[in-house]
Length: 390
Length: 74
View 1 (cartoon, rainbow over the protein chains, first blue to last red):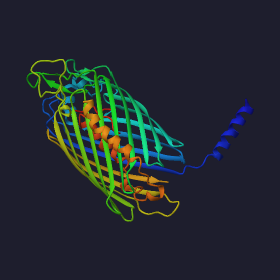
View 2: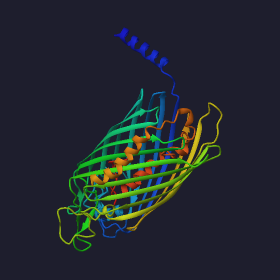
View 3: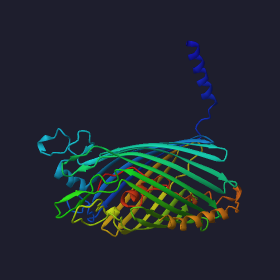
View 4: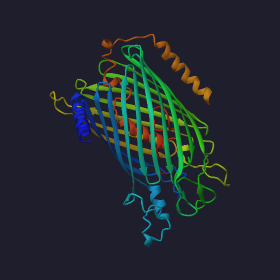
């Protein structure tokens, strides 16, 4: 045994000697924040329509280039969310208070909820590995996410094939999500048991260099979801405001998308981007998304900034209604499934001060984005990031 | 529905295929290699913006966006 152990240790030592040192590692901390307001949420439990929400989310990304053909990457995320509808819901039902909190008289209560003064939390992690083999690149990924009433375990594989001296790149991917959702039972004032929700998604795309100054991408995808597809707290009005029932949606949904992206250089320091996406599903939602943007470099390319505009429109799901005088097989008042359009504007910047060779390089970034929907919902997103490259 | 998708997807893919005749050699890609020419010039920060859209809009999934995950909030 000792001989084998010594042999394995020696082999491992040789591997360490042979293995090239990591050429490059990026550690990227991004702090996201979202401030949402609006009173157009007809799905909200207390009938107020209040969809105010605040979310803070730090995410740590790592990307390490192990050698010329191999890299690993991943992220860890923690977010804290406070929403007006959840608070109203909580005050009315005690849904999120610990079971031991009997003094409130609330009939809800789950001992395992992670709440800090009304803040609901989520943790998640993603891990991926990318390996280049000749003109092929294989990228498997896996991830996990846990929050108050939703868990997700997911994984997938993306494959790229580089052709024509890398002028033309084909890609295809498959992703599987095995999720669980725990809806609130309005009638009995308690959480239901977790219910399964499965998502399978395939996509294919191609990228083509058109000239020395422009490049285009086109892709299609199909996503199929089965299981419990309702929201965890979405309700519908079935009479007066106080008479509400949980939304009901079919147990399957098929989604198609087609998208294209085009980038053209407009000189030494400016590039024009145009993205378009079409979406259709078998719940009768159709959507169009247009996003033109301009990207600029400054300080001899040490800095980059970008301004963008996004226009989105969608038709309502065939199960959507503002209210339901009679209970039907399928019914939802979720404002996200209604017909609306949205406008969005934003700016992003990044700057990496010059460093001497061998020193850790730092990059600082920020984003401000404002989003406004036609059905009384608006949101402000602010981001700050710091990246270490060593 | 599928027919409409093909109306958009097929011409896009066909144009890519035809454009396959174009070849820009590595030494001529100085402009293309610039950060501002990348599809996602701001890297990881785009992920959260995509999440915001997928949570707040009915048309999530596909095209590089999260197909699952959840936000239990209303």
